[in-house]
Length: 126
Image (cartoon, rainbow, N blue to C red):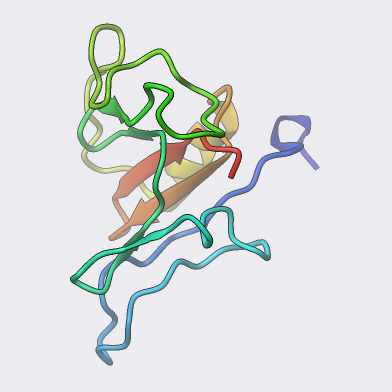
């Protein structure tokens, strides 16, 4: 096992969009239990999202990394970015690229991918 991965968990290729058979979307993981299953938020659309601090590569900012959520490994940003917590957005990140970014990002505990091109790096212990 890569020493950079020790202690890290991740969701691989999370499918947030509903599948063709109209079944409810779910969070898929390579480990049991999934990192955010207990803390996932159910949206009215039927989608589930992980709550807490994350790096939104699509939007180019850290979200909810102000210390509000217990277990956050990053707490020095505003609720939606702020000074020093924004960066050039990346609108097309493959799941493999997302995994590499997760492996290279200090404090990142797991990652999620959506629609094969959106990547979020999560900074939550729970």
